[in-house]
Length: 197
Ligand code: 5GP
Image (cartoon, rainbow, N blue to C red; front, top):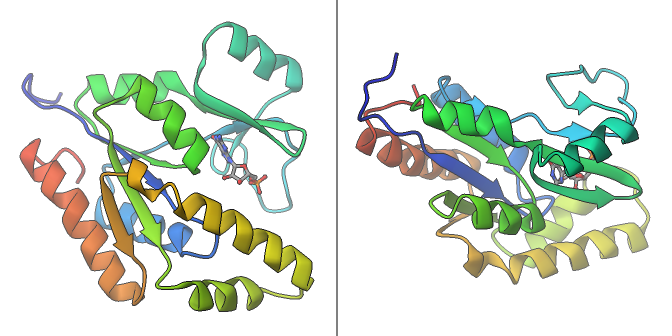
């Protein structure tokens, strides 16, 4: 049982694709194994290797839409004809128990979440510069130039909204970015009696 005075933090982390968010979040979770990681729900089909309940909660369209009506989602969006949403109950329960929660979510989702959880600690991961981002996006595989251009444009649009976030971390050097992120999150957890680890 957490002490009565303990209070969980909600950490919201966003980044344009190619900024290294997935790696940073993995490292953060390793540093603070007590952080509750929110698993999203989606109506899209699982990809090979994806596990229900770990990568996503895979639900039907009917289940998702019923969830909208019942207010089950802390935020949700429709992306490429599929629904994606963050279940509210696990977040609310964890926070109530004094545990801290990590949400890895895009800018639109973060906006909706801030309406619901104005006290959330928001962190935006930035690539060092557009050239580096372009290289990272292009270096991923065999995508066509127009696909890379579209991703870059999306990234640019997301980066324009970084002022929404309380903290910005530039991922120029991975180890340094991990250290900054761990130190930032750690400082909040310390304040709240180290509930993350
Ligand atoms: P994918 O299908 O490739 O896993 O994800 C497609 C898109 O859905 C990504 O841009 C991802 O950020 C977004 N997404 C995943 N989970 C959620 C969620 O819980 N809420 C919102 N709003 N978007 C999500």
